[in-house]
Length: 207
Length: 196
Image: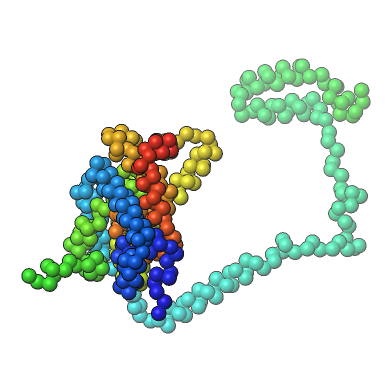
């Protein structure tokens, strides 16, 4: 069987494992035999022990002169509280969802099928092309093309109102807001200001 | 005297009882490991406040994952598992701090986190200061093995497993940590000259 010592790279590793008492009994015995016969190895072990002791003493001294990060009782209290909370959480009853058995399962199934069909029909109907979406009909030679400018009927020519028509229009617009007397006075004033033939000349387009 | 009085109940047995709802078993576990775990974190992260916070996080995480703990899986006992969780918490914190630092450096802000905790600097004796400084000056991977060995009293095999390195590497780091510490303590000027 392969010795554990063969896995260790050097004397320091072997001696550290020996000092820590982590070697299998057979390997430990072998190391003790080597130490008994090798003075240099014994010296090496002694130095290692002293160094190890120094490191441990340093840490021990440091711990004795420095206060802990938190007082021991406080730290322990915090952890104990965590443990109680955790245990309490585990004791909580597990919430289960009760399955409700409804009667008439065939009715639910048929209603579901019907609802699905209706939804399907609705979607189909929505996506059907509407008349607005259809292509415009072709213009045949029999019918006049509405887009041709020759086929557009001209609107009647705009005409300038005569002075009498203007007065009548003004009288109509003021009818609701003014009394009859004031209205007649105002109409008379406007009629006096507008010359009788000027609008007629403008209406014919002559200068 | 009964056999129970002669041999203390193992951590693993206490874990079993705690899982079954025995809170006193949990209290016993806490009493066994609280103080040393706190000291381990205190030395590892160099901040009392942070050590306390990580200590709580470690226990919270331990309880949350207690059902997953398997003593027979070969990963060491409960104590090794507890210290592994604590070490991971510290690593998570360091990673987060490195990210935070890089962001802060890019913004050229001066942070107060570069030095050790203020409470450490204010505390007294010169010997204590140089001791602490010597330990703090150890390379992180060496210090970790030394602290796990001293505070956790873990086996080297467990430490190697925990840190994900070969056994020889863990032993080498322990050896170097001890030599390094001896050198630093034998020549205090080394410590002073290397203090940040």
